[in-house]
Amino acid sequence: MMKRARQKVTVENAVPQTSQENKKQKTCLYGSAFSESDPHASIDWGSLPHHVILRIFQFLPLVDRARASSVCRRWNEVFHIPDLWRRFEFELSQPATSYLKSTHPDLIQQIIKRHADHLQYVSFKVDSSTESAEAACNILSQLVNCSIKTLGLISTAKPSFMNVSKAHFASALTVVFVNSKSLSSIKIDDTPLDDPSLKVLVANNSDTLKLLKMSSCPHVSPAGVLCVADQCHGLKELALNYYILSDELLLALSSEKHVDLEHLRIDVVSENPGQVEFHTIKKQSWDAFVKHSPKVNIVMYFFLYEEEFDAFFREETPVTHLYFGRAVSKAMLGRIGLNCPRLIELVVCANGLQPLDDELIQIAQRCKNLTAMGLGECEVTCRGFIEFVKMCGGRLTQLSIMEEVLIPDNDYSLDRLHLEVSKHLGRMWFPDMMPTW
Image 1 (tube, rainbow, N blue to C red):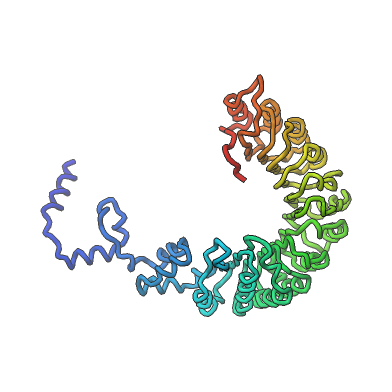
Image 2: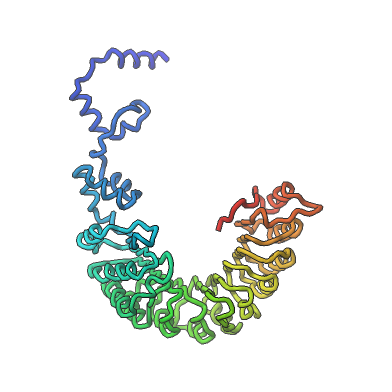
């Protein structure tokens, strides 16, 4: 206490500094502005180190980043540091029809002129208009000095890229595929991508490509998929539509010359109820594929109507992750319990008004790897749900159940249910008030 008192006296009796000395003290140590000893000191933002300004810029929206660059010469220098432009998203939209805030054309030209060779992680987000998709293709065509590692083409609504001529789209992609030579991740769903474009991709990026996501690309054939799998020996993840999947393709992917995939994502989509007849993949084909890639995760996203599920899970299927975006019947869930022994995650967004107790218990009994479950607009009795949790035990690391799903019975109220479920999970658990997936 005596020491603190002496310090206080010393400070109070100190000779007042001149205004010039005050200014110097404030500008030389930017860190003191954040110290407890001088909480009211102002900050000379222009003296911040480059790496601190760079970090601030990385969190700013593009428009604010551009405005901040005019604060001072130092901030403008940071604005043009290559590290700031390695990751960039071009937003392209038509003001009259889109909620997207479009990237200003002048800024796009500045980026192409000064930072094209710095871009590494690039995505294009476009609205549904053909004009926006064509603008994205025009920008791609100018990236002749790029060294892109990740490329994503994102349509917020259809048709977008599908309305661009196949020749224009292929020409734009070819510029990136030929010049990058280091592409590792490509996400180009809902585009006119075709087999010749894939051959160009493979010819220039076969040593680096690890992920290829090309769902809803109707011009890609099984031959194009095999071309990628045959030559890109680092390929770990592949995403495609179910319509392109066949017994022949799975058997070909199972041959020794093809890669061991870690993730195979399959989108099963129907736009018009009853208009699409889905084929069945044989158990022998699945078995050969899993034997070739024993650790593969097979992820299936279903957006079907109930009457279109007939072709699926009639035989044992090695799917690991299942997501149902539309209503799925009790019978379908029963088949999953019988024929999906590798299942790890199951999400059901909707079902009819019949309790799913028996189906969930069967899934718990036979799907020994199940660790994640999500239920939306379904019905399960509290007793049936507790029995399901009891059988799965602590291996359920994710359990997302809407409160409206659970039907109280004579044995369990909702209050008692959360305590009983928490006991079997080994952690505190409550039902969700709104969907979390």
